[in-house]
Image (cartoon, rainbow, N blue to C red; front, side):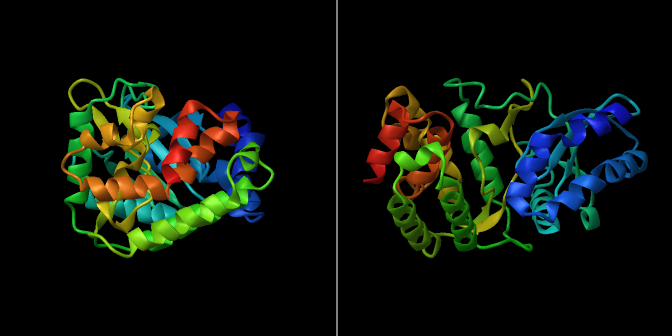
Amino acid sequence: MAELMDNALMDAAARARLVNRFGPAAQAWCDALPALVERLCRQWGLTVSEARPGNTGRTLLCRDGEGVLKVLKLCPDRAIATAEATALGSWAGLARVVQILDADLDHGAVLLEGLEPGGTFTERGADVPWDQIGELLADIHGVPAAGPFPTQLERVRFMFGLAEQRLAGSPAEAHLPLESLRTGLARSEKLAASGPIALVHGDLHPGNVLDAGPARGAVAIDPRPCVGDPAFDAIDWAVLPMADGAAVEDGIAKLPHLDGDRVRAWCVALAPLVAMGPLRRGGPTPFTDAVLRMAG
């Protein structure tokens, strides 16, 4: 345990990501993390087995005294942890959402059930159970939007602001004009201010949906909840077929319970953000070219 604390719990790369995300104040949080984890593990009867990377905190895979997998999430920003815990509390009992077991929000800590085998749908490629994704979206959007959640307008302004900071000096800068981000923001602001209202996951890409095994299937994790248009949560799923040369309409057709026109409008608005991640990591591809053409 001590060796994990000293090495994997907060390595240099993890510390750099958190300082980049939250500023210099995150240094003190990183320094204090081992003591916090040790206290929480005593409190909840856990043994840490693995630390997972993340941009807004640390995710620790743990086992309880009976060997059951549990997940301890910690974040320097208590507001983020509180919003996640409140959203998961709103979704309590939904099989397609990870269940919250406990929380210490004064310290930005949330304890979740473990999901096994736990592979993401990013790793599944084209093998997506679209019926389960449709059920997941319908379930989370069917819950009343009550809690300390930001508006969708606040969410998209934050997303585009962060993207603008990250664009400068990145490999994506040569392929993604700043004006594209600003056009996308204007479109997103218009959509966020119109449309229906629901409790929205806010970050429902395939990497935030895990395979919980044959009995349970697709389960959402890591919400960045906001209140706004439920079509927003379909963006990353609607564009998936574009990676194989299909049109966005092919993805939209796989989620028929949502307003297809609004899903497409959101895909157009957020196209610069959809393309930016791959452009930062590896440069243009047929997928990024198609996504940016969609934005016009």
